[in-house]
Every structure is written in C-alpha cells, then in structure tokens.
Image (cartoon, rainbow, N blue to C red):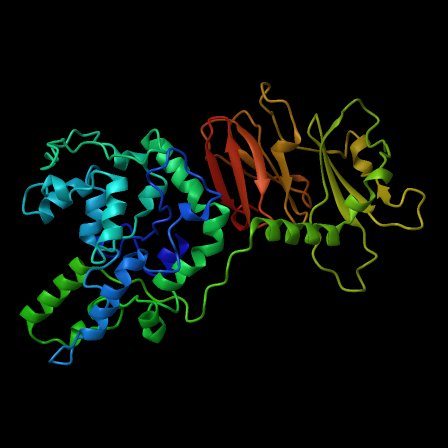
Length: 456
C-alpha cells in the first residue's frame, strides 16, 4: 500500500485507484494449500500472459502494430490493469461505487453476464482472454462487505442459467466472505508470495514498467496511460484536449515509476529469524549461558512495596570517554514509587558481575518520587502499564481512572503531560524499537499511536 501511495495512487481517484495483485491461481480446491507453489499465480509475468497460451497472441499484437501517423507507440495491451470501469466492476455492490457504476452505464446496471458475480469465473476468464488484464483492488484483502449484496440491488439474471446475480460466488476453499478475506490475506503474507512479490513490483512500479525491459516482459500498455506521455497543456484545441483527458481517465493510468533497478527480494522467514537472532546474540550473548543464569536478590525498598516494573532504556552510542559511565535502571513499585537507579551491567571487578546503586530517594518519604494517581482500582499495576523513553528522560504510564496517558519527567520528578484520547482505561503501553512512536491499548479494544516528540 505504501508503494501505491508513493506512486500517486489514491482512493479518491478511480482512474488512479490503488492496485493489488492477483495472488492465488487455485479457486477450485476444497482447501487452500499455501505450501504448494502451484496454488499461486506467477508474479513475474503480467496478468495477461500468466497463461502461457496467451503469449504468442500478445507478442504478435506488439510486433505487428504500426501507426501510420507515427504518434502511437507499439503496445501489448489495449486495456489496462487498473481503471475506473475495473474498480466499479469489483465494487458495484457497495456505495458510492454502485451509483458511479450506474452513471457510467448511462443510468442502469450493466448486463448481468458482465457483472462481477464469481471469483472462480473471473479468474477463468482472465486466463482465457489476454485482453482482460484487470488486477485487484485492496478491498480483496480486508473488506468482506464488497462481496455481499447487502443493499439488495437488482443486478439481473445470467443468460445461460437464469440465475440471479446476488452475492459474489466464492472459491470452494472459502466458507464465507470473511473466510475468503482471511485466507486471501494469509496468502498475500505467506512465504511463497513474500519470496516473489518483488517480481510483480518490478512490473507495476519498477524497472520493467517502461523501456526495453517492459517490452521483453510483455508489459507495454497504451501510450497515454504513462505519466508524462502526453502534454495536455500543449494541446490548444479544447475538443481534442477534452477527448484525450476522457481517454486517460477512462482507460486507466499507469503508476509513477518508482524504481529504475530491480526491487530486492524479501528475506525468507528463516533468513529473517536468523538475522534477528544474530543481532540479538551480538548484543547480549545471554542465550549461550542459560545454564549459568542465577537470580541475585537486591533490596530496593525497606517497605512492603513490591516492584511491578523494571526497565533499562536503550543507551545511545557513547564515545570512548563515556564508556565508564553508569546506565540507568528504572523501577516502579506497586504504590507508584519511581526509582532511578545507577548501574554498570558489566562490572568484571565486582563479585556479582555488575554494580547497582539503589536510588536513595525511595526510602525517604520526603524525597521519594511518586506517580500522580489515582490508578483505577479494578486494574492491578503491572509492567504492561509502563514504558520508558529510549533516552531515559520520560516514563509513559496508563491505568488511570480518567483513561489518560501520562508522561512523567524523570529529570523534573513530576508529571509533565496528561493526555486523554481513549474512552476507556489504558491497559497497555508500548514503544517502537526506535523510540519514535508510542502505542497505547484500551480496555475497549481500541489503540492509539502517538508521536513521542509531541508528548514530552
């Protein structure tokens, strides 16, 4: 979706609607086998030549085309994989696309046999007809309602079977629209597609979109669909200009070319996990010594106030002059007492292998730092309610009676912000790896993403 946005695609323009690929090629099996490569469409080829039988016809069309005027360049396809009519074809059952479809068809629904009424049948027609090159819209991966005729529109009767067009007929492996979306999304994210999706990206957004590589890949469309192919400002004849604008809007527009080099292949799950483990092992190496791990109790408070949260914020890179400086270890107790401890996690000269200097303010009633409450009595304090900024300057906390997110300054020892965006208790708080974004979850199952730079 990010590539679509970068390439100028938008939900607000039917002629530049976001484009997604056909992923699955098996719509007849009882079960969708995501481990079988034959389940999937060949993502290295344009949809018009996924069926090898169509290749000679498509290539011959390009080779034999000649424009006597010399204005129109050769092309493989006289239609486009994403245009207004195609979007309305798929989304005809939901507004505002229903009304736009009727407007496009001069005040009525298109004939039933041309309606989108069956996913297996649509795929079959695509494979049999090299002139039909429609790719998919994002709704195929998240919006089950577009497959249902919930508004009861009269979409007509099929001529052959006299069957009324109603809800979209699903593949055998999908028991409902929701099940189809779930499995189709799962297919998009599966290992096979992850390994081959870059090939489709090269065709639509990348180096095979234009030029000799596009010709070689049988991926050339009508000239006016490409960005910059037509200078409308240079056309002085208003009738000619209007006709060309209409052609561009109705025919479809090729996305802006984003890449001039091949898109890299996504790491396999195994490679990604291996890389992540290598980084983790390089950072700590603790997994190599699990048999030697042992707890070392340290008394932090002389009161019966158990610790519910402990965090050692990520330390920024240091110069060699700062290597000996202590890190910060933060703790929060059940009563909301904040401790800012100083520690050296790698002290080879100490008997424990580390040194921890407990915050002296914890045991002094006059100087101890405490979070402003009250916390909601129905929600026991736990580590899920707290997170520390990477620079160890702020403590973010939830669980308050007023459903707020609060920001506690460790330097000033006070709450510096209390923000309410949730309608129920904040039950969990987390920070992204870079420390730039915070996400809070509420008891009502909603989430809010925050920009950390605006909270402090």
